[in-house]
Image 1 (tube, rainbow, N blue to C red):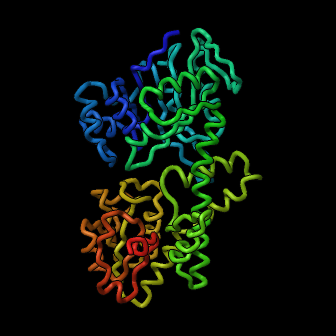
Image 2 (image 1 turned 60 degrees about the vertical axis):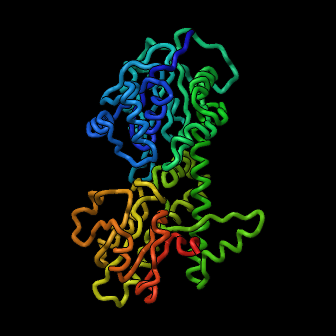
Image 3 (image 1 turned 135 degrees about the horizontal axis):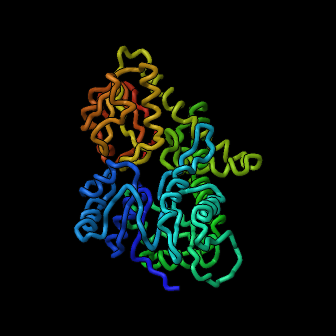
Length: 428
């Protein structure tokens, strides 16, 4: 069977899908990016990136000018289908894979023998098999492989290939990481793993590590859960040090002088679409044996409330306080507000009517809808202007541009600075 990879259909053109689509088009692939939101499709086709990522605008322009990149609301025939849609959690923290299911149902009419279907969305263990079941039910004419972790290498004539290959790219450095990072290639069977490996070898310089789909799914979840548990340890230490009157940043700096100790930095919480969500996927698969994972999640989820209480305490005895909020995204130097602890803290301050809030977030040009209608919240472009006007300064995200802010004025003298990130300590 002759396999071709020239035509790629990417389902979901958000924070992962759009950079991936733009990158692949720059490497000579013909790429169709599919999204159910018409405004995103229109933005991409007109050359406007709806997310912030260095060099994204230029790569999009290149792909559009050559005709190798386009966007649409529905998929079409392709050689490779890549699923990069969101996988959030429900209100009870259970996994929600409905977007993946929807994407698979959308592509099913277009899949043909020899096609490669790749799921990159972070997913609970067993998701790849469930998606294979959907294709099998909707396309009984196709040979759809079932889960097989054996070493068989023969390819059935007329079969399709299904693999789970989790994304491993970091916002702010996506194009380098698409090429340089090692990739896990989890085939639902061995031929699927080898076929996906052949596809990624066209543009990845990092190692391509093949395994079965279940192991690949669990590996991705374990990566982010490892980080969550370690951050929870640092955050719990910060709570303890607060009670004992110890400088958490000095303590961690000293402890990390041990050659085998590397304590993470604490913060106001954990945000983004991976670390606060992926541990729940493991927990709901095996709740009786995931006690540490659940506890870590609860600790990290409690940190916005702790930081909120610190800001409230700093406002005590200040009539009609003005609070400068430095940072709204979930991590430095990006525009992504998904599950941002800073955003949650601002919501709590609004609900408590804590004062007038001057929000400084350099990577957005308007407040999110949940804040825009509040008269006590203003988006300020100049961080120095916000700091100079404030009674209390809350550093919630250590954006690079904040490193040069002068906090030696009235705010610092009155001891009204809440540095939830250690930015001031780290710049000294």
